Image (spheres, rainbow, N blue to C red):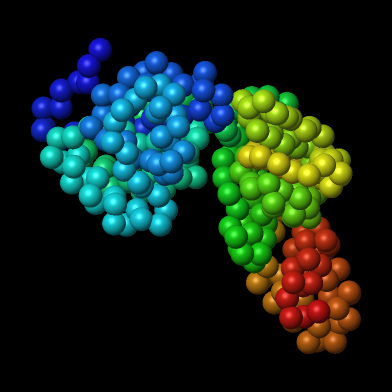
Length: 291
């Protein structure tokens, strides 16, 4: 089989998933596309070179990652507009998911360059179907923001979502993230998938508290996907609560304290008025200058 001829004279950007860890998950089609491409854009060329060597793929590699995408993206689009076929890969899994490849796809679409996605491995969906949680309705979140405030605001906005939530996390942050999830959402059912498709693949299922204890007793290692059950209907915040940010909560507490209420009483009152768990209000105030 050969590539479809593009009558516009433009090349095609192929999005090629690569294995999460087990090389047997590479598809025949992905191998063929990579072999026939003029070049392969890779997040980490050294990592991708090992994959290419395994499948005897001898195609030039181009470095394309978060730190050079502003410069390298237009270069790749120029080559595509000149008729070359470019294959885009990430380090593992589906390109353009929590990956700078999303920006290259946007550039290609903006320039009317054909974009062809290939099916293949994806950590979020692979973990979801074995999690034991609801698979009919789910929301992919990916990595949370790095700053504490932005993380809290993001989690607060997600706390009332009724769908299974899918997160990616680095091993050194897993323990803290599990605690943040419990603080923001309560002790919900969850699952943590580690080292998917690899030799030491592991699923830890239970509530956030028991999973947190597991990783307190066991050092988190490898790549992690965290899945959290959606908000039960009876626990869903009413009215404005779902849209409140830390700044809103802190302002409300500060206003009551200015009127003479003790801090503890102000926290309790704001939690009651806004329909929020008291622990959420307390955590927001604890991280502010009010304490």
